[in-house]
Length: 155
Image 1 (cartoon, rainbow, N blue to C red):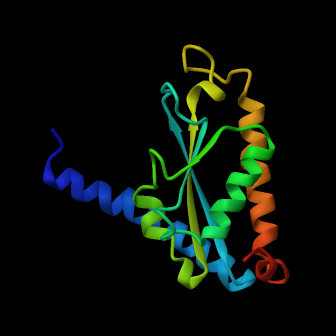
Image 2: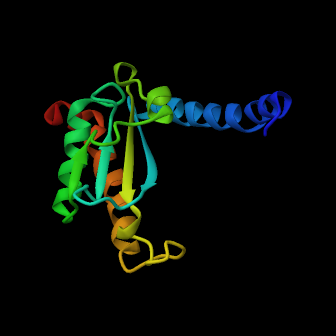
């Protein structure tokens, strides 16, 4: 059992600095480019009938809807089976850092482990490069679409 003192120390030494670093990075990017995007990547277990990738934007509260739609389009164009906000709509990180009204967008990407890990779930599997390519393409393409000369057309 974690003591109250240990919990407070962990929050002060790890949790707080981690989130301040994210906020500072998003602020720097938004100041430079007018907007910023956080891709919060997670791993989900394989479940029957579930998509390979779940994009969560807290039902439009952590990212502009067009960004979520574009992220889903990018993933589908690479052959991924995609769901948006089901069964994961986004957790604490995208809730805390996603402020689309202030140009700070955050998407949670839940990728099924079986798509990039071996059968034991302990080492990269055959789909690892595919998953890495997805994240790279999503970051590059969404970033380009968010630049001021593209954003109006995308909205």
